[in-house]
Every structure is written in structure tokens, then in C-alpha cells.
Length: 357
Image (cartoon, rainbow, N blue to C red):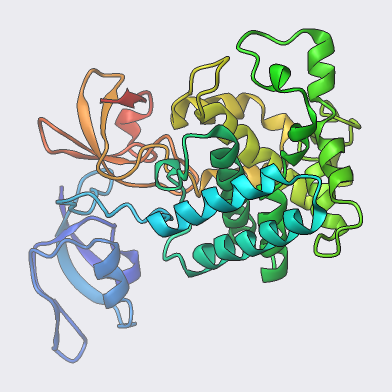
């Protein structure tokens, strides 16, 4: 529809098109006709504080700004030299779990490397394919959890020292599994009750391994000890609740669950990122909800440029992410080129992404 608008630039409907030129009160051309008033344009024009008169056209719902190509996926990425370093370091650590000095020096140095990468990242988003250092689960999982813990801590505004420490705690969170019999850790079938009780002791083993380590703070050790505790008291090994679990462990708990769900193991197939997030929503009573919401803002379940299958049967391309809504990005329908924001377009509220096409 078309209408005459009189007011301030900030009041223009986002996505409207100017049908006439916009002038300042001094007669200076501010904006030519046929301009799409997208977010960037509105921001540039917002410096002019006077009222304007213009004829605009717009839809009932503001149209999406024009997107020709998908935004670049700017998720954190490890280069090959870091991947080689990580595998070499972790293989040395896990071969010397009883050597506290080797364990803590190696983990601290590697934690500093991960911290530096996270600190210099242009976008604090995670696409696990870009972090994969090895096909060996133990190494991959340690790096994934340490890195995601660092990103999450940074996003929620923790200090640099805390981010450094939670990185190390994440890297070492499962070190106690080295004290669990390999036949239980790698069992391809469902664990018996007795076997699961043994598994549940690994946080205690990890904590004890690091007792007396000069480079490891008690907070780091508590992160390792409590990373399987749930805020509702259903976790292990002590059934702690809420703040008694500690900030570090609450962060590691979230990223540990996510990485475990999306990683293939001998006893289970890997879930897609979207399936994992849906599962985690059903478990949300177990997480610190402020941290969980922040976690959703860093996960790229469907990276930009991914072709996806919609529940309507249509194929679309992911164009950009919606922060805090990782399952509802901005997409472009392959056949019609129509741009749809799944988080805002009311005609697509019941449409979901089924999977990558």
C-alpha cells in the first residue's frame, strides 16, 4: 500500500520504499525516491533529527531488506597448524594423566591458545565443523567443550581471567574418564546400572587428579567436578542445585551436552545441530536459563549458505542468522527467490526447517 508519511526518520516502517524524494527543512536532498529503507539506510539517515514528508509504499508487514547472497559464515575456525598442535598436546596429556605437571602445563598453554583465538574472533559464533581437530572423540570433545565454554563465558560478559580458566576447565572436564575401564567407556551397548554408576565417578577422578596442581585453581577443579550437576538437583555426583553448582560448571554443562548430542559414538548416531537444540529445550530445567539463552545466540544450527528442506516441502538457502533463534534463520526460497525471516514472518510461523537438503 502507499501513503503519505509525515514524521521523523526513525518512525518510518522498516522495509518501506520511498515514492518521492526526502528533503531536509532547508531543502537539501536527504534521500532520493525509490530507496529501500532497510536497517542500514535508516541508521545512516537517523543523524537528521528534523521531521520529513514523503510518500512511501510498504506491505502490512515490513518487507525484508534485499539480500542477494548469503552472509558470510564468520564462525570461529581453527587452522591446520592449531589442529596439529591440539592433537599433539592432547595425546601427550592423556598419555600422562598421572603426571600433574605435564597435565596442567600442557592444558594451561593450550587453553591460552584457544583463548587467544576466541578473543580475536570477529564473530562469536560456533559451527563445530570448523573446530574439528580430530576424528578421535576424546580430543575432539575436549577442544569443542573448551572452545564453546570460552565463547559462552565471553558472551555473558565474564572477565578475561574467567574466560581463560573456563577454557582450561572445559579442556580437562573429562580427564577423569582415563580412570574408568576402557571397556565401559567404549561399550557399544547400553550400560548396566552398575556400569553407569562407575561412569558417574569420572568427575571425582578428574578433580582428584588435579588436587595440588599449582597452575589449576579450585574454581577450575570445581568446574570439572560439577559439570554433570543439574540446576534442578538431578545431576551427579552430588545432586547439587542452582548456585551451589558454580558458574564454570553450569557453562560447561550446557556445551558438554550439546557436543555429546551432535557427535557420533560407538553406541549412538550423531544428531544434527537442530535436533540437539530441540532435545536441549526439553532439558532446559536442568540448565541455568540465562546461560542457555546466551548459548542459543552462539550456535549456527544451519550455517549461512546451507540448503535446507522446509516442512512445506520447499527448498531454501540460509541467508543469515537470527540471534537467539538458531532454528529460525532468514532464508531465501530456491524457486521463487522470496526472502523469509522465519523468526518474524507471521505467515511462516508453523513452517520449520526439517533438515539440511
